[in-house]
Image (cartoon, rainbow, N blue to C red):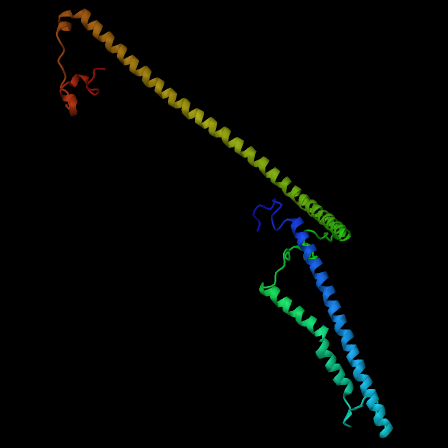
Amino acid sequence: MNILPKKKWHVRTKENMARVRRDEAKAAEEQRRIDERAAQAEHEDRVRRLQKKAGERENSMFDFASSGPATSASTSVDPSGHVNFFAELEQKNTLNTIVGNKELEEEKKKKRDEWETKMGILTYLGGSTNELSKQKSWYEKPFDRDFQKEEDEKKKAKETTKKEAKVEKKKRRRSSSLSSNDDRGRRKHRKSSKKDEKKKKRRNRSLSTESEDEEEKKKRLQKMRGERIRREQEERARTEHLLNPKAAKKEPEKPKFERRYNSQFNPEFARQNAIR
């Protein structure tokens, strides 16, 4: 039913729904008038017949009273002479059978309509809308909000937060006083420990510098010793060449080398056999 809701010929538009409701109300009003006229006609006919019967009964009662003893108002005497003590109840029953009990019929109709609406048998056009049921949805109702209560709750919350803040400040002051004393002792201990560490570092540096100086001295001495030996050998060879040049021309005997690994093919290149 929700296809093309903007079209004028659509069933569920507001204009068409209002038109249908007006037509239904008009038809119901006409039917009500017809029913009222019929009921009024039946009532007049019934009253006329009852009046006729009552007149006949009164005549019979007067005839019986004139001929016999007096009876009560609730009793009636037939022309045959039978006394009826339940004449009023019989009249009411006859009225109910002719007219019908309206209250009972309305109650039965109401129950039947409720059951049919629950089962989905009885449905009206636009019956599910709020316009027909005259009820408002939750979003159409005004929001009931107690502003005074909210303000009181906010004030209470602020007061509680202030109290908590005061208590926390006191705790912080106490803890800060205790921590300040502890910090003073720690600072003193740190200062003394820093001084000791500095002294140790200085000692270690001095020891390391001394050890490095000694190693450098040893290396220098070894180097100088090697240079001195080399110079002496060169001077010795020069003097021999000057004094005995023939002996100097002879090729020196090659020393016997220890052959190891691949250097046995060219032992003169081996580091261990190099002439120094």
